[in-house]
Length: 334
Length: 267
Image (tube, rainbow over all chains, first blue to last red; front, top):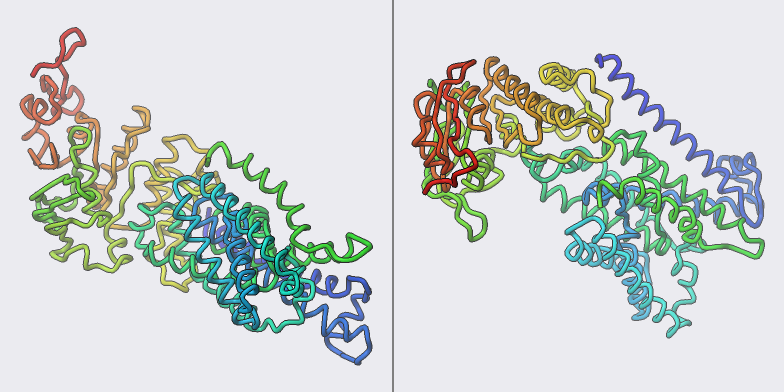
């Protein structure tokens, strides 16, 4: 391939990224309009740029827009965390949900709430991040021998922690009223709590992931090759783990345990990225929010009686992807 | 043999409690093709890993330009020493050109874009290794011989004066083995220093300028094949009765075992 042709493929990837961002903007506008009370897209745009104080505009500005922003942050966080975990563990089945990291964050939040600690966004973030880190370390140390073992350990830990969380919630129903939708994984009502800190952390961690993506390109070749290429493997791994913890922790603190986004998104964009971790990260940071916003719209309109938590929608989408991924990569990898 | 820039001095190499080598010293002649030979588990791969700093010696040091390799910054060392392990694993979905591009990592500052120099290094590496036609193929769909050439190209893209390869010919059929060794000779001719752990003593004799024979973690002979390879050395290193005759093609020593399957090994 000549230099020009090579530049062409980079431009091509850039064009795909720009198209993705445009699609994300469109989905965001539509998602702000959809719900129990529909607002036309043109009215949505007016509410954003020419606010007139009408009920429609208030719904858009005070409820739907914050919810969409949170959805963008959570979707990007989960998808990028998925990229990092898959690259780090060289395991195409890995994602924060499957590996129990999300369950760890959720369980820590639940215990914190039972003890009366989860009172501010900052304390929720600390609890959730700590739980994510503990679960990641535990699952990695038990299951690192093989990709399948890692997944089994993660799924087992998730089941145990989900059970314990459910037990706590049933024992203390009053405490958990505020967390009813959150506990299943939902954006509903979460826009009422301040989430600036959450979004800021997610932005920082996604930027960190992009910075790490080139060293991760080297680490993806295995420890031996990475080290002889001059990558500081241990430092890169620790930094990536920190990013994963922040991303999964922040997403879970904000929206509860949403599984499969971190699995679906990297798999869908992987063929476009062609083995490049920087592009995979960038594409995932755009497709993650699209997937979550679309799922969230689905969660608002699927049932006539009210909302379905968004995690149920992503689970419906993610189950088949997991099976497809196992069938596609299974023979070679597991 | 002329100058020496890479040398090992009094190395003690060990994995946890298992000592592989003690007081191991050797010089890697510059601009030559050095082959390290020896029986399985004699410590030749371990030595190679110590030379490229994958294994830190418990004692002694590996010196590059009279400086301990441990004192180099990781990327600086990676611009001098290129290494290909025995069985490298390509990530899923990666294509040939991308894999070779990863060899540019030590030349790329943190926030840089892909440069024209990166581009020319990759193209040159692909031409040298003869993998031009494979650029857009997924690495995991290639044959063993093609894949090995792609990995060699990845190390070539690193543009290092030194190339160290751990058994680069295993898993290849005989024709691909010879093609790969011819490629390494060509790289030597272009001025690089090549060090390879080789299984086949006859290939080592034919292609290497400098032979290092190891046994039980020690160097038992080093020098030009014609000077060091004889029946006594083969008996000592491999415990194999053999005669050594001139290779009919190159005149280099050729080891022909006398073990015919009807008599057991002596000793």
